[in-house]
Image (cartoon, rainbow, N blue to C red; front, side):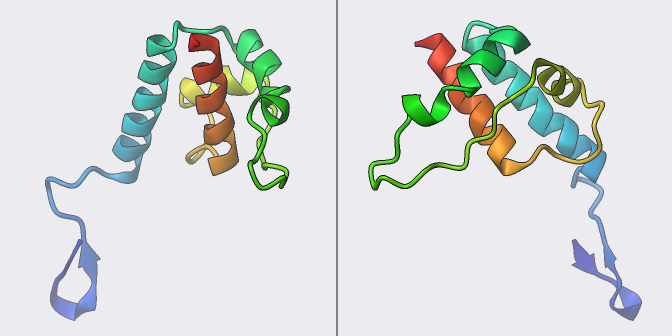
Length: 102
């Protein structure tokens, strides 16, 4: 973003807009899922329910990991929901995919 006359910010032509940035992020999540063996949404939901047990915090604190639903996985990865997924959803998604892969 650059300042132009009148102190307004404008996007550079080579900067992706919010929709393109969201799609690029979701494409990375979809690619990660494929690299992890493309677990089904139901499989990810089952794994996510056990994440606190599978990944205990070394300090004894309880991690804020969200249980995934298969419908949310499908809708979010398809870009059917507004905005980006919440950080705790992304963390649960990544850890669940990772657990499936190993």
